[in-house]
Amino acid sequence: MAKIKRIGVLTSGGDAPGMNAAVRAVARTALANDIECIGIRRGWQGLINADFIQLTRENVGHLLSRGGTILYTARSQEFMTDEGRQKAVVTCKMLGLEGIVAIGGDGTFAGALELSRLGVSVVGIPATIDNDVGCTNYTIGFDSACNTAIECIDKLRDTMQSHERCSVVEVMGRNAGFLALYVGTAVGATAVLVPEHKLDFERDVIERIRASRLAGYTHFMVVVAEGAGNAFEVGSKIHDALGIQPTITVIGHIQRGGAPTGRDRETATRMGYHAVEAFAEGRGNCIIATQEGSIVEIPIEEAMNMKKHLQMDRYQIMEIMQFGSNHVNVND
Image (cartoon, rainbow, N blue to C red; front, side, top):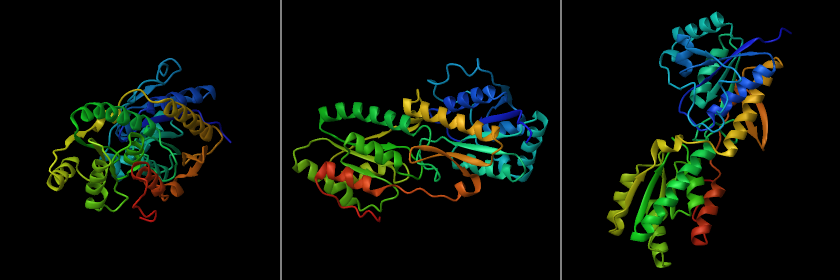
């Protein structure tokens, strides 16, 4: 089997803390295996435009603690077309790239799958703060985003408690509630709204605020996943039902920024290492995933068909911590 000589690495879709650590790991593992590593800037669009940089041990130094991505990221409408993907294949041939490491989420992997069908070997590394990639228990960036949101809410709680107010905080997560439920449990939220749980507003929000007030609390924290509703609309409904005026906070893209946590740095490093090892050992067209704490390779076709569901037992735990009982059916 001919030894692979040169690979490319790119980041695509929404940025996530730890992407730089993954790029560093890919580059350094490649160089340790005498494989040249080319950084493709601006995702799939950069591959179409041959926008690249040579990666060395030196220029990927000091990346472990840096947020964002030195390779930049973008979403490419052109790459979604047959013509655009053919241009990307031409770039791979021109640069002599024998494989592409694609770091991102489901959208990134959908592009990788299409490229693999055109004969370019690809390996995906899951990186998204939403933690919604079906084939892996964990995605790079999730822990960092959770900790950022928790820190913001802890600070918000200090001032809200001083004024005895209700806070409605909207966190990211796209159409998944992983981030909201994790954060809500960690901050002791009065209520958490996630898209996976059918909402009864009176029961799940209003009655919980009432129960908290009757228990002697004067500050109420409601965490809303962006896929479960609009924080301003939630606040308005609380005002109509209870006569209190909630303070609305949308944390937004601050959750994407900042230095990655230790977990994200370490996970990104392991995933980057295994991605290159897959190429070096003659494998490709797979996603590097975590399953029960171990790093595994899943064929990309299979990986793209896998689904991940929110663990509703965690919702029960959150409710019991607040009220001593729960209303959630784990089959919801």
